[in-house]
Length: 385
Image (cartoon, rainbow, N blue to C red; front, side, top):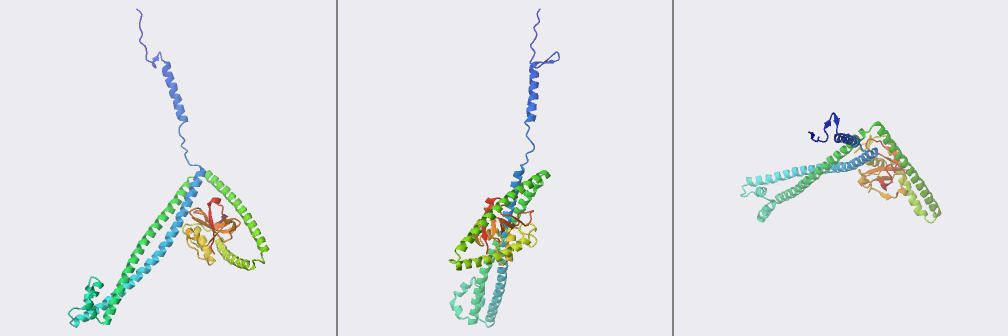
C-alpha cells in the first residue's frame, strides 16, 4: 500500500535542516536588528557652542536688566524709608503736643468741677463723640473763657493735623512695603540668571571653552574694525566743520566764540569724568555696586560724572534722559552711550569709537569698542552736561 505522509508545517526541522521559511524569518530578524542599531538616536544632544554663547549672553543681559530694576527699587526704597521715618517722627511729635493739649483741657475740667459748676464744659467736650457735636451747643461756647476757647481750637487743629499725618504715614508704609517686594524680586531674578549662566559655562569642556574664547576674540576684532571706521568718519566730519567755521569766522564770530566757550567747558568736565573712569579700569563688575572697589555699568558712569561735579541719576533708565541726545557721528569724549532697546547698559565714550564700561558679571571695568555687541545694540548717545 502506498503511504500518505502528512504535510509538515512551515518552519519545522527535517533531518536537522531548517526549512526555507524559518531561515528567511531568521535573516529578516537579523536585518531588522541591524537597522535598529544603526538608527538608534544619538545621546549627544548637547546644544552647539554658538547656542551656548547666545544663551549665556542673553542670561547676562537679563541679569543686567534685572540689576537696573534692582537699582531703581533700591533707590526708591531708600527714599521712601526716609519719608516714612520723617512722617513717623512728625506724628510722634504731634501726638505729644496733642496729649499736652488734652491735659490742659483736663485742667479746665477739673477747675470747673472744683468751682461747683453743674456741667463741666471742658469735660463735656472731652466726652463728646466729636468736637463738632460739642460746638453745636453754641450756648455752651458763650460760657467758656477766651483761654478755654483757644485751648479747644488748638486741640481740634492738632487732632485733625495729626490724623492726616497718620493716614499719610500709613499710605507711605504701604508703598514702602511694595518697593521692598520689588527689590526682593529683582534681586532674586539677578541671582537666578547669573546662576543659570554659570551652570551653562561649567558644562563646557576645555576645548569648548577655547573655541568660545576664539569666537569672542573674533567678535572683538570686528568691533574694533567698526570703531576705527567711526573714528575716521568723525575725524572727517571734524575737519569739514573746522573748514566751514574758518570760512564763516567773521560772519559768526560772536556765536562761534560762545560755542567754543561751551565746548571748552564741557571738555573740561568730560576730562575729569574720563580721568576717574580710567582710574577704575581693572575693578570688577558687581551688580548693584557704585564703587569704590567695584561697579555695575550705571554705577560707574554715575561715579565718573560725579567726579566732574555733575550729578547723574542712579539707573540707566533715568541717565538716558539726563542730558542732550546727540548723534553717534557727533559723539564727544565724556558722552554716555546707551545700549539695547530696553536701555539696560551704558558706557562712557572716550573717542575713536571706544568707551570705558563695566561690561558684565565676571568681567572687569575696561576699554572696549562701542560695537562690542554689534552696531544694532547701540540705543543712543547722551551728553550729560
